[in-house]
Image 1: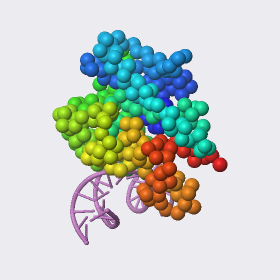
Image 2: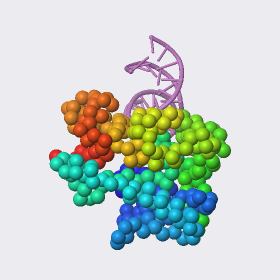
Image 3: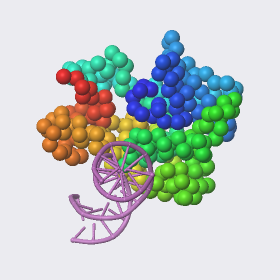
Length: 276
DNA sequence: GGTAGACCTGGACGC
DNA sequence: GCGTCCAGGTCTACC
């Protein structure tokens, strides 16, 4: 789950590959900000912290970790579907298919905007700048900060965010933060929304800075896999794999994974391109 | 509905 | 060391 995509390498996540430890920091309902460490345990997942959260915070924390690791996801239908596809079949034995998420969809949405039209190094630089400049410090861990809250970012000016290296994305992130902070947009409600995927996609596309690719990525993080997040890498892979290197567009990428039905985004994401 | 051009930054490259 | 070009999605204006 941790290695399912790049999030584990973006602050406030910190991934220790050798020891299998995932560090993170998050704000709790009480307003406290704590650092946590997630690790594999004998019969599940262990979460440790130096802080002493109260019962309400503890309940929130438990739910947040289940959400972040997507522990409630039932993949049995998907695993049954891919059993005869050599490029996917290994997933079941490896228990793969879950995607690492941030504690809040706001954080996921901002980070997704930061992945657009830039190299991964740019995304890292921008996310690091936001956390270091505007993230709340964690209790009992002086050098750790959580991702900035919508309220904190909403207080800023566009120039502040441009200075943080967000470039032309600054007004998009600012508008999103202000809409969420004011209550005009409840992105966290998308997590357990019963809206059809098409409608949810419309709501995501209404966020400035979120286009086709970003909306499909966010839908995947919301457990809706009907769309393939088509970026230049997806086009290049599909071109090499099925079109003899000829240029392909969105339609060809979507068509390549059509047969996986409502799981097509996950099939794309987990497709073993190297297998011969 | 489709398309061209602008947006911002870092990295590669040539001089 | 400097200037130029390019890659990376989305938005807006225009047809």
